[in-house]
Length: 413
Ligand SMILES: *Cc1c(COP(=O)(O)O)cnc(C)c1O
Image (cartoon, rainbow, N blue to C red):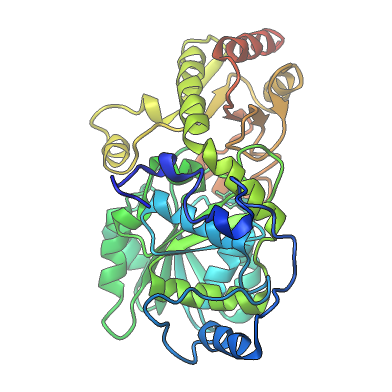
């Protein structure tokens, strides 16, 4: 199957799929089915014994197909392929990024527990941590890229912290968090009886440019709606990690019933075939767009990972954790909301829409859109001002993108 230790991009078209089980079809069909027929009652019994953990798997035994809430070939093959990028033992695909995130937080936190979380986080995650979890007696403590290890430990002092939740690079400013530092904090707060887990939302880097499991994280999560799906035509999420932790995640998914359906699984498999070429083209375009913005007189400041000051602490984290500056570029326009809106309203090729990581370029205004739910005080602290515009760069011709940005900036008065 993998005689040369093939790279993930070489395996995305075929890995985990056996044509002989599907009439020789070169591509995995859509298994649009709720349930699977057993050959015999004995087989059904054996499948259930395995699925419900009543006995250990025999050496060559494959878990049998039972019912699409438990397993379905389109999800199973997709999950095996996603594992290849992150070097994970196991993966669970969800019907959205938020269901992946909320399932992980519900599985690893209990009433009375605290979690440390990086700020800012995705708006939906912020809402879940600060508005939903407190109703179950679980509280969040935020930390920022400026906090040192001692600062974070001081914030956790005397509180039963069970989990550290990190989103890096942070949306929408591209601020970076040091995952090695988070691992040290977790090890210091935990003990052999009660481990503190580090979970990372890696949506901003896709599975290509940062591998948190290799940098000390216990679980990595994605909104697969973004780079993994990559075509703005589906909503999905994924969680990956070692077999032991993933067994817990998969069990809760079975009983919350928030797995993705076969059609979404099939679309994601198609998307994975082009993941690397898409993401690399997006990053290449983004670097040209960022360079253009940086020299434009109507632009005050550009937030782009390829422009970090060499030797700065953010640059050191960048070098340690990331293999690309990514395809997300934010900038402060000179002026405020009025100027930002003039720019957004005059774009002709970029679409004015939230979301990111897709083939088409998107532009939005975080302060009044994706991050409007963040308190004004936190927005000030995190640099999410009225002049900030966020761009997600797609696969279009970069000269067309730059032309569009230039003509829209010219309309700003
Ligand atoms: C979009 C996004 C999410 C939520 O994912 P959905 O698929 O919309 O539920 C979570 N985290 C980040 C960083 C995101 O960009």
